[in-house]
Image (cartoon, rainbow, N blue to C red; front, side, top):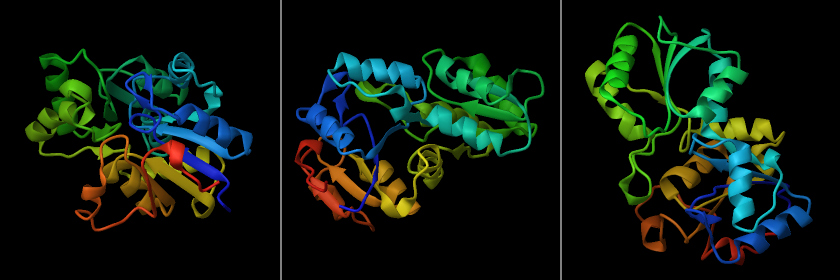
Length: 250
């Protein structure tokens, strides 16, 4: 294989919640032993790379902290390219940490941006303030468009919905399937699309994002999408495997 870089989703590919998908540990070891540039890319913005490293370690996989890139990191990278330096944030500490690192002031006074991520602490006051700021001209940014997680836990897209309905303004979603997060991940790992593979379990996010960013795509069937779903899409993954343990591209 002439691909030297690998972008890999986490949930449904390597882990189910915090449980290892059989064979994922040997897959990761094989990739690292072959000196392939590996980056785990997740839409979930509420964990830092160190949190994710610990999650992997608890499941029996040892990888460097530098191997993780999240939608919180991509959101901070996106906002650094925009004018403005103040943000009203609905999200957890990992997102706020990345924005602070990028030089942003977190405030509820005349923000330039309203940034929404994942949080369990969501309330009437947050909705009201976010909607007011967006209606007054703050730019509406969201870490990812996912509407829910396991057991119907509300995710970022669901938290954005009332703000969008109230203001009539849609957020810019940084995360998959936006090609932005894949391009940002490529920049982060100093890689190019033409020699990078992306592995994911979801046709509508991982595979579509990879397709839009020009990467070679690999669908695994241990998560969201199954073989029957492929014919429903106007695009096709280049490769389909039962799990990462079966990938034989390198």
